[in-house]
Length: 270
Ligand SMILES: [Zn+2]
Image (tube, rainbow, N blue to C red):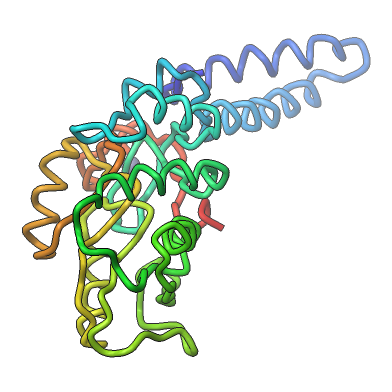
């Protein structure tokens, strides 16, 4: 079901609440009926405006694709994968960056597809020197990092993240010697900020950075974001999927203007 605007949601909620109370008409006085309708209407409206997962392959394929040239995963494979795992939620969200968006992406739902994603990334790395270690944050990207480590025969080093999901340093006991050739891995790039933190951590350890690999790049123009991230980070970025999920500063967010309830991504990731 597409996201409803507030007016439509409230009208539908009003109709549903009236239908519910109509059946109890003989048993309740008028005052109680009115109170019940108002209470039910709030509940229905909240339900209609809450985030909904997109399960249709066709709808997902309008939002997701793959970077050219495709490797082991085609755009249709990615669309099917994301629809089946219900990875994209439609609603009103605030991302960790503070930007607002109509779509939330749950990489954690793709656990069962990590092997296929890792195969595609390995194919994209073909011809490059193999990394000796993977650096991955302990957030959603960790499972992809461990599968890639296994496929590439590389050790896995974890970076701890703060409450905003930003990598802050190497997890105690998780280390690699100076000069280790390291591939930085994460679930996706939105602004490149999270990956930049990982690059700084790797440089502080005097590791040799082999590049950055992510499942997806999300934003209105993923190709541009990938180009800018590559330039900004200064290393090659390997990515499988493009997620055309725009985000806006909150003063330009149409859902804020319609007063649609806001969900914070920090809460949804838990
Ligand atoms: Zn908003």
